[in-house]
Image (cartoon, rainbow, N blue to C red; front, side, top):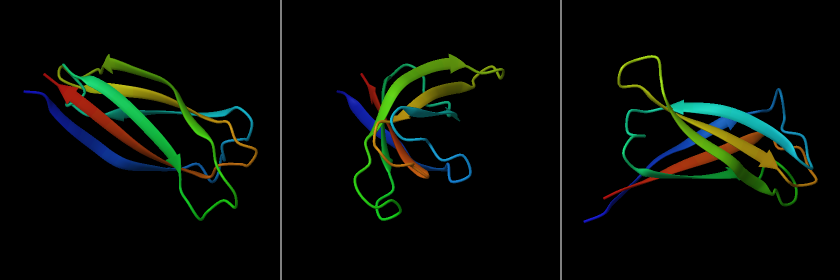
Length: 99
């Protein structure tokens, strides 16, 4: 039987360094020992109501890595703003599928 779980939402405040429009990126890492022996998907959304008009947010890269600790697992994520407006906040969900 397959098990599907999720992690999040994680809210990132990029207000000080707002993600620029038309290709600006935000890089961040999440640490969770659950990011091992599974398939991982990541979705990201701008927070509705904080920016007038639509936002086009894209997860362009995810990578897993072992951390400095013996059982530490990291998920590195790069999010791109493809829209015409600055994006001050990002909400991220992580899905995990295990056999």
